[in-house]
Image 1 (cartoon, rainbow, N blue to C red):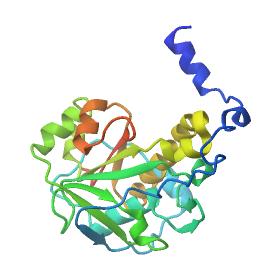
Image 2: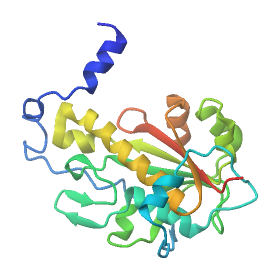
Image 3: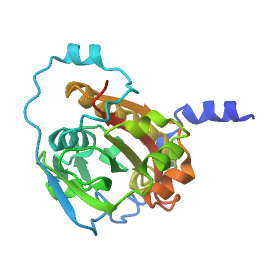
Length: 249
């Protein structure tokens, strides 16, 4: 079977009952943490206020944007709203976390990293969203991971030369911790993860549009460079999505 046919077969739904019979959840193994713990300094961003836009208007204006105005920063509140809409924890029920994005089995097997270049009153550098710090709230806590030396060149290389991404106010990197889904779904987990990723990306783009910001989801990136950029091992955690964010020209 060639690669194209193998990929087509992967997209089809196999028997979940057969695939889940030996899951760690069924074995009684405790569920993995809701998110990785923070070890660095935390910065809290304020919650965004109400957004006055009809849903049909929002769907009408959502477009992928690749031309960013580097003279106009994002606000801290705008960044907070986008992150919360993608991964905020609204409620915890046992092993499940309820969030704005749907996720198979409420596993939410992602971490959100932000490469910040131009956000008001926020130092440039790499951050990670820590949703467990603000359960039930729309405020957002970020763990500062450090300065990004050679920001524009490194980010451009990481996304296969898509230089326009380096002019955005910030770039959201989504990583996957597959065991969070494997714990429940075993070998069935990976199709579910890909479906969940689409939900997350749509929330980010709709939230950016509601704020009058541009965004563009990128599936073309250099796996090794992105994982190195974020400090990931590439096995138990690895990059799965990149989304640019910012004011447009």
